[in-house]
Amino acid sequence: MASPPTAATRLIGVDLARGTALLAMMATHILPTMEPDLAGRMEPTWIGLAFSGRAAALFAVVAGISLSLGRVPAAANRPGLALRALVIAVVGLFLGGLDVNIAIILVQYAVLFWCSIPALRLSQRSLGLLAGAWIMLAPVAAFIVRPWLLDRPEPLVLGHNPTWTDLGDPGKLLADLFVTGNYPVVQWMAYIFVGLWMGRLPLRNWSVQVGLLVGGAAAAALGKAAEWALMVPLGGHAALMATPQASQWPLDAMLRADLLGVQQTGTVWWLATAAPHSGTTLDLLHTSGTSALALGFFLLLARIGPFSRTGILLPLAGAGSMTLTLYTAHVWAVSWSQAGGTPGLEREGLLAVHVVAALAIGLLFRANGWRGPLEWGAHGAYRLGNLKQRTAAAPPRRGRVR
Image 1: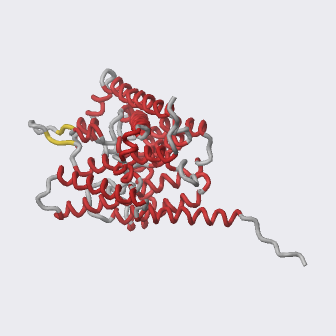
Image 2 (image 1 turned 180 degrees about the vertical axis):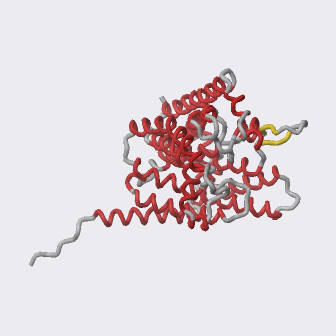
């Protein structure tokens, strides 16, 4: 049996998964997930089929894993996690003011961290049960609540990325963040719980890595197989194509590529799909499976001697260690490009520039042992919370008895 890799190798594997999620999200932001065919019908692109929904889910699952890692895990520094999430929320609210055709995840990301705080001290078994129950029940709860939030004179949905001005309408903002928006926290908490459960596993053990790879593939396949059974033989697809949404959207293509923006109301058959960004039980099962598969693959990849000795993985791992900075820079750069800042550059070329820049910056920072600028700020907030917690827990000093 091969000796287990070091802790550093384990962290490289997690960073590789996070870096891959970042690059895949860049691809879905810059390249189309659907395009018209020769007959004018919208069809999914290979980007939509391969990355849509899976990239963002991997990003969230690895976020949950990260809460169990580090010298001071989040369970031991809950005030620090709350402050770090505050930094992320501030960045997200500033990015929300940009005129950009990207569904920015950072504010929801921060809310996911805040909502995870009560679960941080749960045992691994409890987290596994909670994740399973959440995957089963949260989509049903959201489906029941969503019409009540939307069927009103002023629907409780933003229709744009959260910004500072939305703080003035907390009811609509909270409804959008938790249920009606692009990344509804009610369903997406499943990814955090799955990640927390994975983070408690002995990830340095090769058998666990293989188990994540194989088990993730099985879960992903099960989600899609169940969707096919419900959609095709049992008539779910036909029922969805008869909804009003089918006349408003290219729904057939969106069910295969990206359901982002479609409000799932009117028929219970919405719960039977595993479409990307649908947030259903089958979607959460499938994308949790693909995230576990990716994590197991990259943890195993980091064990391979030639890769670790040559440093060929360091650019991707470096990008994965500073995703907050690189994601923020990417969103800003896309907004600049969409405003006419990159004349003559095709979308494929623009994606290549973003990917090469992310890998080069990641390698530079990793080779020098630097934190990304925004990671430095978030880590400082995390340390501040830990310092305050230790200060509050310290016993009071008593004066000398004379």
